[in-house]
Length: 324
Image 1 (spheres, rainbow, N blue to C red):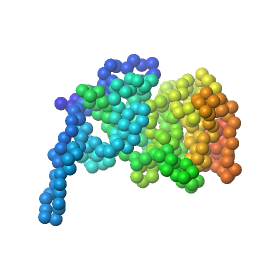
Image 2: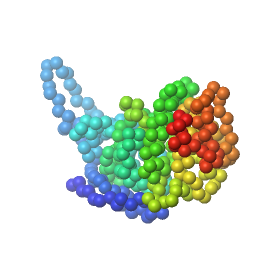
Image 3: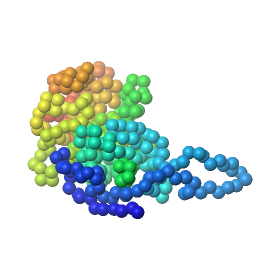
Image 4: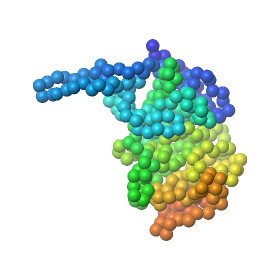
């Protein structure tokens, strides 16, 4: 029998102890059995002389009210598959998380719990929506059901000859990214891992900021946006993190990584590179980069403003709006 329980609305810090019953404090969580079933038990076919029908041998798996579909991708945290809501017939995506695998990832369990709690609070057209959370106790699996996206910017970049977008297309995606960031920052949320791989697209071309595993929610009574930890992708980290600063502006971290993202999708390369993470951080820490000659204003000045080594001189979202 399914059972539900209440979510504690307080955010989980990195220092919080994780209950052995992983995710058992999340609401709503449906406890279920996800055994294979015959798809014909809920899809009913009307026979006629004009229809030739042969039952497929492959059996479909049901997760709660959802029909499991094809594999969409796979990351360090688990697989992502397509799903169909059998009640609404809406396409969904599900992130399948195994407790055993999460335990092998530093802060894996904390990051997942943080992401779920944040996504339950966030509602914006440019932020991925969390639809449902399901948990199979016997198999120790978590299913995060999300709105369906057809792909991400990283996949699109890799499918283009020069690994970059036309300027008009990049501008459209970037403006949507800024819209999403303005909303997140207005809610005191710092994403910390903006990059093409975490920017997804729906069927109608709407950009969705995803993957809030390392995001941070500022204290409601905090005087500013000061942060003390950064766990994002190395190539998108700002000089203050590369140089080991103990405190830094969280909002300016997102500005920097958005600048690196804009640079990447318009040039096909990264502003800072290195043979290893140490050399990469050394180059980022110096803050010296070049912009290809074919990049003209206003894009050139926008990149220079967003990739200022000094975070105090780095563009704000308002300045980005004025120059984008």
